[in-house]
Image (cartoon, rainbow, N blue to C red; front, side):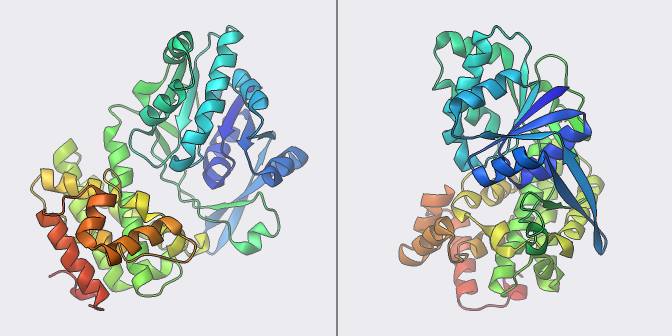
Length: 397
């Protein structure tokens, strides 16, 4: 039996990558610090995935699973030594904490003389997460180990498009390992990043060059999803499906997607027809009520989501590169500066800075946008309009 190792037993790990590994004939070990999850994985040896189908669900059972204590570095090293393929889905902010244990696994494979390459799919919402994580890991390796890392370990960027929100309460109460997902289940990956033969993983689609798919995910899916959340919060909606059903919010989401599409079309030569079809599909997927995806979850952590290379600023800069005014994209960013739900410390920090220090200062600190730029002036104007209660439909002409 082939062995797959999943670092992170959260919703993406269980609800997406775990399913693909199982469909491909792998036994799966999950590494996580949540011992409730790890113990139940070891006790049950399986977990259900609930796939939305119209007004109901179809159940898919993932079997042959195990749990590994994420605080047991020795167990992690041994699991990495036994792995034929691996993936991470821990969250960008957690990568720095798993770098040392991961390095221990690299060291163990080297000590055992394992020549077979280990391809690791880095399922984190960050452009060049592979390079970022590689640098973190190498800080924990000596020169010989770094050489082994470079020749035997491949960090592969994917484009994670499947939406896997927090599991609805009624499903989680039946089984805390259960995950609720949308039907979309395709995993584009960077074809050129693999070492050796590319593993045969169901629904994994290798592409080269891959940069377009990374940007399409971040600048279209992630950007419009967050915009829907931030505008939805302004109107008091709880769920994403409620927000996207609002005609004004839907119109702005479509307009922002059109701006991003034109920029991607000019950057990569992809047809507008293909990008329009992708946009329409996104809007329809956002309307999925059964996912129960909340405005709060999708909008969470504006400190990251409004940052310099992320969904809004990155999209705006690509638009500007091609002479496209990112008018509606900036509406989403401006609404994000107001987003501060209880318990979301990162977003509260950003919103507080915009209020107390001024919008331009916050843009410089958190978004990498110069205080004296035209973009900063436009965002400041939009921010004030939103604060004054200007209707969403009147934020742009």
